[in-house]
Image 1: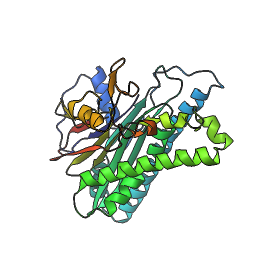
Image 2: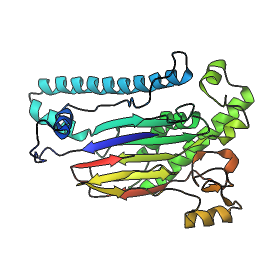
Image 3: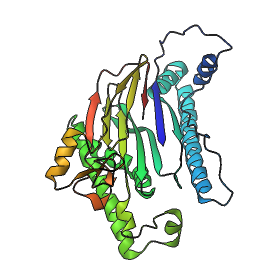
Length: 321
């Protein structure tokens, strides 16, 4: 299980009276820390020293620390430039208000390996003189390499598609991006099966990227592109995005389940079946009707996302994945 919390808080937000001894007071004081903070969850006890899961967890923590150090480095550069321009207060305020506060957590649970991945790219693209932020959560199944590939590549694919986007055609743009991501995953698996994977790749992947095991690997994908005015959410699978506005939870995506009426009709029209085996499953196997990868279940399981926009983006809100 992996998750992201993205918070946008306005500068004019009134300060609520708090008890200095309460946990809420401690949390508010922590919130005053500048810029972006990546938090590695420690709910799972560390395994043995030579266990592969331990190596995977250390990799996740190091990536988070790298992102934090990169952000702090960028902040120092901005502060230096601001000092030279003799407008410290105004420019620093603009910079920090433009970058949301972010936190992540990942828990392996009962699985042998961590199969989920998180992608965070603040200011990954500038469009019409506005910074756009990219956030994604990928819940892998069967193995981790599809979720890892999405983490490495999907933001670049979305960036290229947005750069050539004629107008605000976000739905078409996100559908093209997810389809290209699925195509890259399929081609990568086929090439590795034909040419053979190297030893380091085999050691880092449970299914060893060998057919037919690699055909049974996939991942959900819930992606959010945050602009100053709105949030664009694209969902493929049963991962979920939720907007918290003034203490009220607002769902930004709908799970793709095989027994959802429209998804059930689509699967049946494609020649597939939904079998109830510990819940509704496509051909009695997969508990979601859309995913990236899972070549053995195509065309019943498709990578096309449902994209939606939440307009009138106001301050004092949080987004959860």
